[in-house]
Length: 225
Image (cartoon, rainbow, N blue to C red; front, side, top):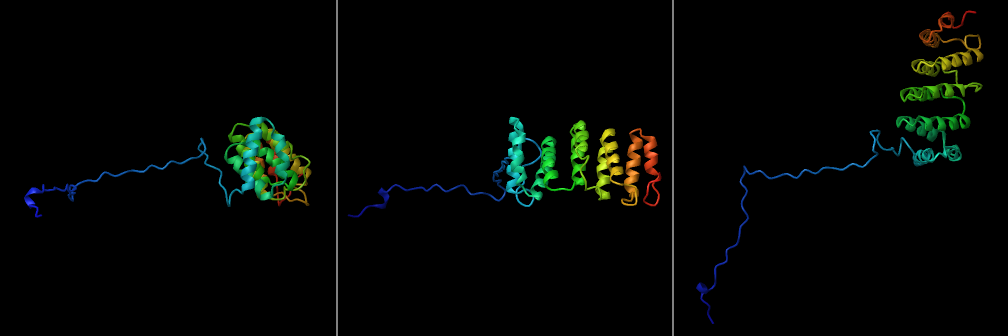
């Protein structure tokens, strides 16, 4: 049967509105969410800087410090390599956990002698920056009786500058006494002129005028007596 086309209602297809060239399309701005610690010091960095063992040691040290069982962390620390111990100390200093850094430093000193005076200078600077100046005297006092590590004049000068910058007279006098006991200024250990200059200026700032003048009397690598 034939159906008349006039009986079929016309279908109107809705066309999407055409966009003119001048029309503006709303942009969607995507904001990224970054998760990290609640302070501004950044997360622990794994890889070339910190190994997995170092990161785990730092986390366990913080937990032990919160619970008051910091001494229990010593045996695991002794299993770390020297590079990991150094990385742990520097990361703790970066986060201003100076007490924990000194704790790890004692392990490094006993397991991997001799003394690293450059590292000691970094610890002294961090203690001074955080107002823990009395801890500097205790730290320097622990160095007494330990042989070796003083031969590097550059590192020794850095430690002296750090102690003088913190204005710790007691620590400065101890360092000078250890230097003299070790033969500094004699034929066996010639006095470096730069070390003598840094030490002399620092002692003068701390009010030790006579001792500063004695140290400044360095001539041809030997202190006058």
